Image (tube, rainbow, N blue to C red; front, top):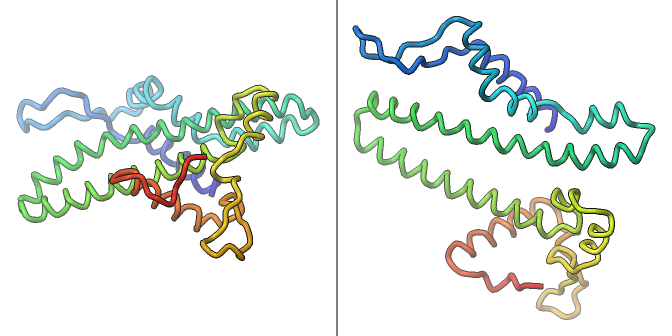
Length: 215
């Protein structure tokens, strides 16, 4: 999965160097926005804008650091902490989805049907809700782990103290049947934990689900 996203992001960088950019001024005759077609100007605008974020999120820094510092464990540990934080740049790329608003406005003008536009708008709202639940579920699971992306920024002593503290993923539980074996969410499969976290997010949006209790 890492290499698939790396190839996709690298391809997006190459395409960005060859994609026309709106000049911001409308043509006097057609009334449409003029486009910058010169590759040198496109490259300059891209290098000044999104290139740093795109490049930082596309390079597999963790694999590169392991290849260069395979012998020095101390330097590798410190560098790994920084690399994991740099991976958050991939989330910043989501801001580029703001361009979809302009594309959607153009599609509304071409579609013309109010009924189709309303149906697509409803689907768009549902997709936004699902995306919010997805990110909230991932964050809920991330916070519940004894070691996660945020603990990598702590000192060694703080990490040990955080790991020793109880978390909702490490607490032993039993089903309604007292004869059942104890289990933890940390030992469950990814699909099962994702469904639970997603359900928890939906429950929080309407009311706190009874199945989730604070530790």
